[in-house]
Amino acid sequence: NYFERAKRRAGRRRRAAQRSISSAARGRGSGKGSHAPQTIEIDLHSYTKWSAVVQVVKSLRELQRSLEADPGLLEQRKLYIITGRGNNSQVKNQPVFRDLILVLLQQIGIPVSIRGSNDGCLVVQGRALASVLHSLSSQGIPLDLEYASQHL
Image 1 (spheres, rainbow, N blue to C red):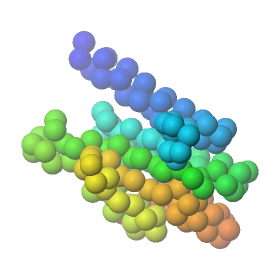
Image 2 (tube, rainbow, N blue to C red):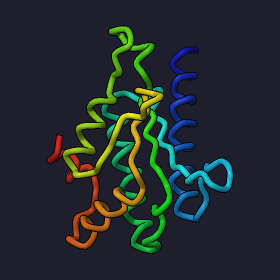
Image 3 (tube, rainbow, N blue to C red):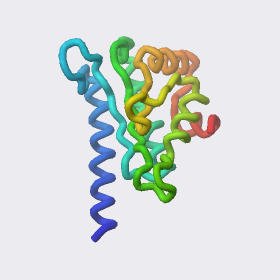
């Protein structure tokens, strides 16, 4: 039935997002070609608004932990947060939660932009993200849901 398929798809996407973050922590990425920076992707298609926020915060927290072990982890990488363009939203072509994720990241102090060629994708430069996450860590602040909720 429809709901079972949607639940399986959401589970696959969650596992894929976790694999992307985990592979980054192990030194792998999805970069193409020898000159392209490696990328980390968090794909939020099929998430609800609030489960998307939870997934982004969980992924950022995992990156924060990984940076403690490997400070150079994000140096030449970009983080792509794929929110979708809103093609299937109730209000046609209005992204459901892109702006919510954008504001959350900005309020936390993470510089983020909308990818020029794809308005359903947010881009965070790895070096800038590492700087913010390191700053939070040095202050003893874990980037978790409690911290994030104070910035929404």
